[in-house]
Amino acid sequence: MRRRWCRASAMAEFLLLMAAFVVLMVALGLVRVAIGPGRAERMMAAQLLGSGAIGALLLLSAAVGEPALVDVALTLALLSAFASVAFVKFAVKQDRQAGDEGQAQ
Amino acid sequence: MTSLLDLASIVAIAAGAVFYLAGTVGLLRFPDAYTRLHALTKADNLGMALVVLGLLPQAGGLLAALKLVLVWLLVMLSSAAVSQLIARSARRRDAVQ
Image 1 (spheres, rainbow over the protein chains, first blue to last red):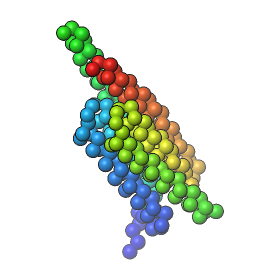
Image 2 (image 1 turned 90 degrees about the vertical axis):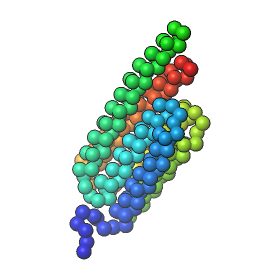
Image 3 (image 1 turned 180 degrees about the vertical axis):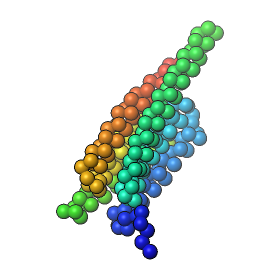
């Protein structure tokens, strides 16, 4: 029986394969979150995860012929940008406090 | 014609996947924050751009293709801004230490 949601073609299979490859790559990039060393490095891995997930969702959307997944990718792009900006606001504030304490001592 | 477009798609998407691979390898292997950021932005911009370029012929119509381009532009804008912010935060951290 042919699955209804899947355009059964070589192109769809190639797109699915590429989506899986991109997800695997950004998952490997998450090792950087574990080993650090700084907060900036951890945030870079999160940024890579965001852009990789967007790319994988776009590929998946074309592979299964589901245009709604492009909207999911768009939402993810917005959220990952917000997450990074929130991190930078937090890190700058904390570094400034650390700098003031360093000067006071 | 269709097979030619399919071939162009396959080449562009495979090249984009290679840039994602390069971004991950660079993020894991490069020695300091700035070079890692350099690798990350390659994956962000070139990987995403090539994937979108490869998906354009596969999009159903003009509107769907336009939407893909719009997603790509938004991601470019946000990733450029975010990499500036992360670089500034790393620089400030190095200055404090």
